[in-house]
Length: 109
Ligand SMILES: [Zn+2]
Image (cartoon, rainbow, N blue to C red; front, side, top):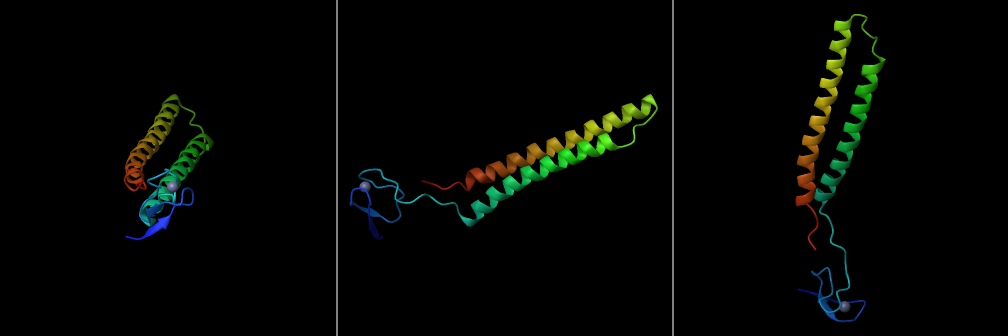
């Protein structure tokens, strides 16, 4: 185990430590692993994609030619509700799974 000097109090601290044992000064920030970074970016990207999908789905539903009959209107409304409900359900499920990965790959101090 190698030692480095604390820049604050000049005490010798292990280079594996993130904080000085004597004064508590943060020597180096705990870093995320490459996989951890990947998971974090996947999480951000996933949220952006789901948001785009939801907005695109909503605007596609509203720009669709409106059915003239009452039954047709009801059918379209149900279809839109089911579609956005499915997107939101997928979004929540994906967020939980990816969120857990983000949590587990969190840098340990
Ligand atoms: Zn120190």
